[in-house]
Image (cartoon, rainbow, N blue to C red; front, side, top):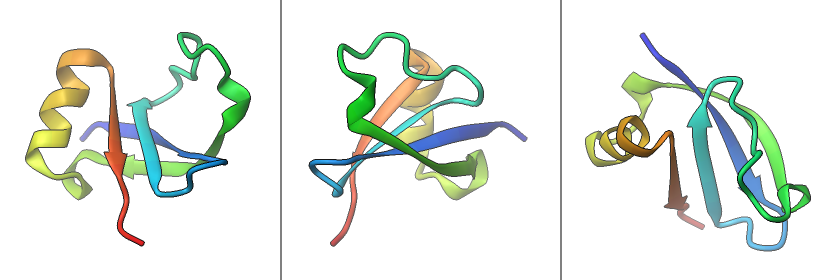
Length: 65
């Protein structure tokens, strides 16, 4: 089962970012805006989000407040 890294945007904590485990955030203009929160298993993600992750290597998600 695949595992992903999960980050939270520091200035907008309702925005999450998932990337492939170990990929880091090299493509972001300002990676310091993101805080690593832990790992997530593919089985814990909605199907649409998982599909986006597999296609793009990353996915953003608005988080519930």
